[in-house]
Image (cartoon, rainbow, N blue to C red; front, side, top):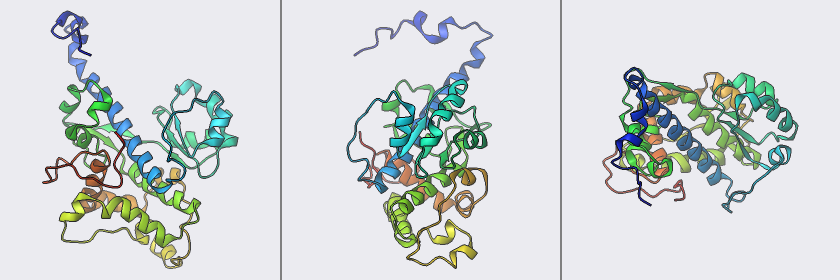
Amino acid sequence: MSDITVGLDSLSFESGLSECEKPFLFLKARYTGLVLCSCAHAAFFVKLIHAVSTDDLKILGVECFYDNRRLAAWADVLFLCCLPSHLSRVCAEIQSELSQSCIVYSFVSAVPVPRLKQLLAHSSILRPEYTFIEGGSGNVWKQVSDVIASLKDPLVVDATCPLRQSGGISVDRKWFAAVLYSVLNVCSHMNTDSQQSLNTINELLIKQSPAQNKSEGTFLFTIQNFVNATFASTLSEDDPFPWFSLTDVLLKDTPLSKILSEDHSFQEHLAATYCAAHRVPSTESEETKEQETSLQLTS
């Protein structure tokens, strides 16, 4: 369907702005960038969980619930998408129904992690913390008109990448760390031992990475990337990982958040996998054709 307003400048968003309001047009691009980053990051997280727990998510579809308690008791991953003013009531309804393994992913940006933990009496919470980078390039967001179509554009996907932050929007690296710890929690919930859990996360994020095919070195996660050396020395290959509090991961430094912040090569491996998960080639890669991986998102 064609846009009948094309060429009609008087119907554009900008036409109704006064001269003193036009300098604030950059906020529109920022809003678009936040929407795209939020959608892209949530999609990447769900794809990882889907890849680990395929038995639970084989059937794609939407089922409407009108009972928050029933929904909370049923869900493996629960997205909080409500007004901040409604959050206390929603949390009061669902907190007693949440299982330990249920991951609550919050889009309620005005409410910080400690408050969410208190309201839900729950520690398996993911909440991305976004900030704008001073001097960062936000031009990529100005041409966006459709979220779904834009997330098939390599430049847009690369701009949403939490490990590159080329679009002028930054997400705390601890969010990415918490996503990976949540994968380990899912493995532990399925009674998977620590070695097999590591094999799973390496298969999903490292061995399938387009960057791994070009690298001279080998980049693989180890137990010490997730727990301190003292605890790692007591963990046998047959033992599962301990249950990780995702709220603690978001609020504190961990072995994984350290390597995500300091190791550029590791960052590039994960960034290439992130882009491949959205079925687009990495713009920083020399690959000219799309890489197919086990993390590809369904069109």
